Amino acid sequence: MTFLILVSGLALFLAWNLGANDVANAMGTSVGSKALTLRQAIVLAGILEFSGAVLFGRQVIATLMKGVVDLELFRSQPQLLLLGMVSVLLTCGLWLQVATWQGWPVASSHATVGALAGMSCTAFGVSTVHWSVVGLISLTWILTPLVSSLLAALFYGFIKRNILDYPQRLDEWLPWLSVWVWLIVGAVVLPQFSKFTVYIPGGTITVALAGAIAFTLYQWSQLKQESAAIAEVSVEPRMGAFQVLSACMVAFAHGSNDVGNAVAPLVAIATLYTTGNIPTSDISAPLWILILGGSGITAGLAISGRKVISTVGEQIIPLQTSSGFSAELATATTVLVSSRLGLPVSTTHALIGGVVGTGVIQGWRNLQFSTLRQIFLAWVITIPLSIALSAVIFSFLRWLPI
Image 1: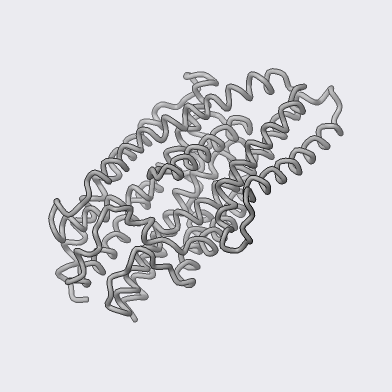
Image 2: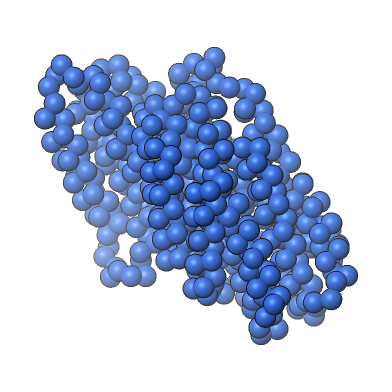
């Protein structure tokens, strides 16, 4: 029992740093554009992340492994898998801690993949790792920000050309923006509720369109209450409503999908420690572990997330609500399409790419290349550093008595 308490503490440490880094960079654009204050972003993200993690974060083991390690290799020596998962918790927690101290937004999923590969190499040799999968995941840190950057540039260019340059046209384009946003919300968030709803053909699209109509009518009524004389200054505040919605969507989806990076090793350890059996790919996390992960993510965001929020929201390019909304919409679209295609991508990489894409439209000179160089370097070294650190930690742990 003492051992299980100790590894639960390690999982909480990892969840804390995941919240301080992953969640913080997702909310950075909203804070940087002044759509939300820092306190509002922390409270809102905390509620949504915790809800997503606890309500929809149960299927975590398959998400974590992603074909990197064959669990059957550990069947004859389950204690090695137990120690390997401890090394994964330590590796990811330490790297995310260092990255957060530096203000670098990095991908926790990439750190997890590297840690898994490092401990598997040490346990059974280099040939036991599916390097093609690791290579594909490594490739996504190049492709994901490029695609998201292109989409963000297209979104922001469209908004600038048709709305910001002609603010009186906001009420004409508002319905189309609402429909697009709510379709993305429906595609990302609503399927999470499938276990709790009766299936209706086309139900996701129907609910999404209903939400789009309601949101559009509300925005339209607000616009009609304003005079033409102040229409120009009302554009960015109205865009802020869209950005808050998109930020909520990213936070909820992140909590439901990425909580596995924090708690899946603990699920594997708890299963091994209590039953002695190798966990299967479809094992679910107990509720207490999900609450532990959700609590750690929320606390890490609230207490340690300010530095990464500042990096994303203020130190790459000055953001307005329209550019922040474009970056978040591009992020959501990129992650959604990639998920449907079965491609492993990072929300962090997509979001940074989206911010850069809006910066290209605003002007290259506005981009802070010194910040981007630091972020790029952190991305490049995440997987190899995690492999090496996990191998060292695992080599040390395997000589200790369990």
